[in-house]
Length: 358
Length: 99
Image (cartoon, chains in turn cyan, purple):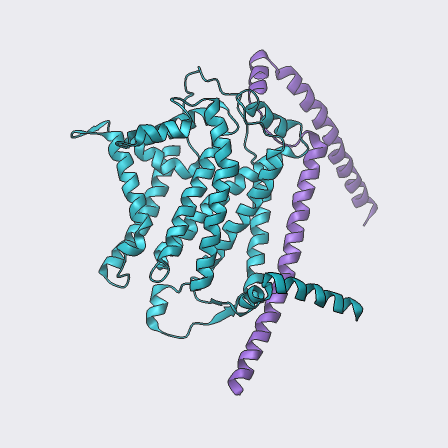
């Protein structure tokens, strides 16, 4: 009886100061629509799961990693050979990054296809696209940190791409590299981005994104909304959370299994003076862009091929960001065309990535 | 189990356990023999992570097996919980409809 009172006192003390009971009440009352596309709702929480795993494993790695030219590669080697279970921690960190980016792509594409970005969820979509960009930047900055031949060459190629943008291109490349070329300064800069600047931006944007989702509620697929039928709803707590827990458990199992059986290797320390090794390839999520830049002719009419390719990528990215504004009549012919473009984009990205690997 | 079957089982067990020992010795010798200059150089350049030795690899496989077993049990329990919660939800829905 006494114990019950103590618990109650602590709870009311906390509630008076934090207002947490309102949050819990909101979660208890929150409803999730149930329909044939409900499976896509689970991708959002999967992204959060992998992000959480990355934060935890990232903290563990940062205790041993040294972001200097002399120590970067050897400190990663030490993590992999001397630190107990260090290679698994690194493998889980690397694989969870890949899984997270894969789920961000799946999440955005599912929203694109089901047209979940339509009014009033435009801002939710835009913050989601920003989160995709931040996730890709996480991957790009993290790729250099082991400081081996492959990561150095890939970063040289990657940071050279913005150079083709008219007016600001050279400045962007210099800003990314911390100078004219990729050096130890670039490594320190990328480390700073990876563990400090990007996490701050990502957490802030994630908070905005989650807030907007809670404010607007879960979106319904367009065809269901147009039918104006009553859709079956599931309480978020506990019915939906239990289902999410099953998805999380299976994903954690898959992540650990893949991490144990396919850990990433480490090459010898990068030599700034050495020529680039053959067969440089970026991470899988950049392959389609990499292949596009590779196959573009050097000169098209009066324009430089690289400049045109980079401008096309920027144009595509901008259109993707403003998709809710472009697709303002989703039920009409234009909206249907945009859905077809989504499918074509998937085929294009997968095709180019496979081509790049061949 | 008949005496013949017991004998076969014992023989299989001995062969199985023995093969571990033989495999370990042979493997170690092979590695020693194959270590030419270039291979040694490559090994020092590239680190391919993984369990060190049979003890660590067995430990890892056992861990993975336990992990999946735990996941399967938890999934089973969660499925039961989901069924129960869905049933309660249906009951609440029906009682509200009656009112």
